[in-house]
Image 1 (cartoon, rainbow over the protein chains, first blue to last red):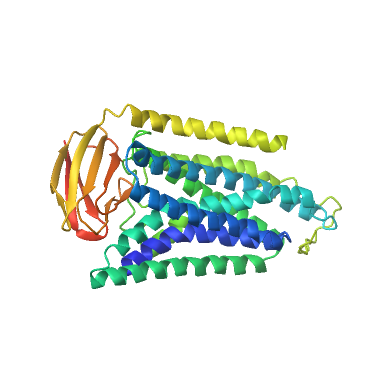
Image 2 (cartoon, rainbow over the protein chains, first blue to last red):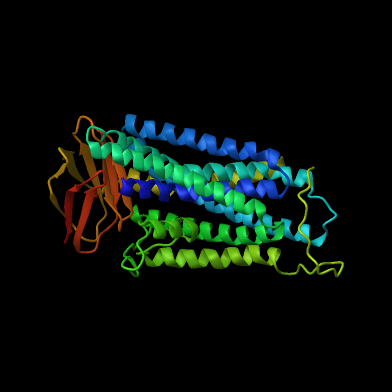
Length: 287
Length: 117
């Protein structure tokens, strides 16, 4: 039971983390009513995961062979692109809020980007969704044994655990001041995206589409990325106990590039124009 | 609207560049296919020999009438569910000489040893 609990918790954690951040983000910018975009995105992703699970189990042939791999790669790199974009956009937004507290967030500007949070929710959930569906489905076929039931219970508990963590992220994120929230989540999102990017490279390597794949180092004696703590770090910052050279290089390059893109808008060149150094928490403006 | 069109065009181009090499790799799959059967909580054969330095495709057939198996090797980032009665192809990258153990994640006692040489 413990094993399947960890497997599902680990796979669900990243999705829950992203959902928690996105929901909190909407609350912070005063667009709580736009939660439906996120809920819709997440819900569609669950549906798509189930459909894909059924398709993989029911179909066969070349399409069923390459389909899941292609979709997994598309989703992972789409998620990276969306998160980078979102981080960049949040950075700009933070500066706006800091620069002139009187000014409301431009509603049109904000709502134009809201489909993006829906997409983030979709990719975040769908990324591990299809595999989790297949995994849980596979577990259900083991139900003849007593241990099968325990394993399924563990899997279900893992899903619940992930949801609770996402909810905690949401609650915590909502309580932070706007500036702190934007700064923390921009950083967090960059690390999550770096981890995703490097995982995408790892997938390409495991398919033989990129060379290499031998582990560069092995820290599994210290912290196994398939355990609970290592699993959290895997979802949060992309920790790998046995990363390949390309995965490490990709991680560092992405982080460097994305930091250069996002950080200046977040921290640099943002001296308050009116010389007022007191940064008040902006009241979320309903527009 | 124009921005939306431009970004969707970008997305399509990006997807294309991503999918093309994968599809190509699959299409010209001259890669060796190695059959493997799973049934009664065991793999048959229990040991396989492959050529080192050459990618291959593991063709896993699950002959169990009910139970799914999940072929797993964490180092190779392989985790693939094979539903009961189904055949699934698993691409494996070129391996360095050595021994690689694949397990059924649902029944870890079921193992297959792949020796690359």
